[in-house]
Image (cartoon, rainbow, N blue to C red):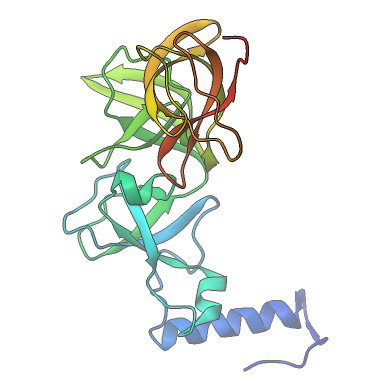
Length: 246
C-alpha cells in the first residue's frame, strides 16, 4: 500500500516507503530476482551468467545489455539493473565488463564488481611490461595488462603460478603517450606503421599507429617524435601530434 506524497511515517518519508513498495511489487511480479537482498553492495551489480559455462570468482563477464528491457520495467533498472553477462570478446567488451564476486553457474544470477576495488587474475606473464591498466583479454575470462583500459592496476603479485592484481574499476582510460615512429621509411598520411611508445623516458612497447589528419597531408618521417593515443571507437592507436621538424 502506498501513502500520500509528503506524508511521513515514523522515521520514513513517503518517497522512501513508496520506492520500497515499488521494489517489492517488481519482485512479487517476477520482474527482478530477489537474490541476497534487492540492492547489491556498493560498486556491485547483479549479473545473469549467459556465457554457456560457470564463471569462477574473480573472472570476467562481458556486459551485453540488461535482462529486463527498459520498456518492460524502467523502475526495475532504476532500483537495481540486472545485467546480461556473456563471454568477453575484445572487439565488443573492451571497457564493458564486470568481475564476478562469487562463483556463478551458467544461467544463474550472482553479484559482480563494476566499479571500485576488485581482485582479478591477469593472463600476462610473471614479469610483464609495467602496464598501468588492464582490460578484456582475447579468448580469456581474465584481465590482461595494457596501456589503456577500464581497470587501473594498483598492485600485482604472483602466487602459485597465478598472477593476481588489485585493480580499480572505472571509466575506460586511454592516456596520451610520447612516441617515436620506427616504421622503415616513415608513415604516410592515411597509412599506418610501427611506433614505439615511451613511459618515463623509456621505450616500453611497439604499437601499430595510424596517421590520418582531419585537415592536412603531413607524413610522419622515420624517427619522428609524436604523441599517440588509443581510440576505443575504432580500436586503433592514432598519432594525434607530430614533430614538424623531424
